[in-house]
Image 1 (tube, rainbow, N blue to C red):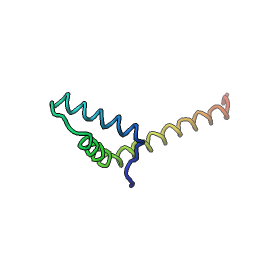
Image 2 (tube, rainbow, N blue to C red):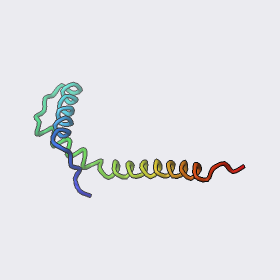
Image 3 (cartoon, rainbow, N blue to C red):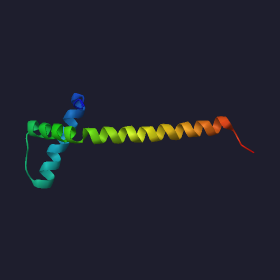
Length: 78
């Protein structure tokens, strides 16, 4: 599976969020490069799990919508 690609704005927002979190939680300042590397590592470690879960949830939602449409088209059964 390919790496998750983020646009520059989202990459910068997440990198800044990581820097803020590390500073707040463990009182250590990390560089933008360190935060970006951490983000890349996290994304690479969880991408298959997130992808699989997203597909599963989407499938469930589509099936629910299909069931609702079939109920509407079938009309009342009495």
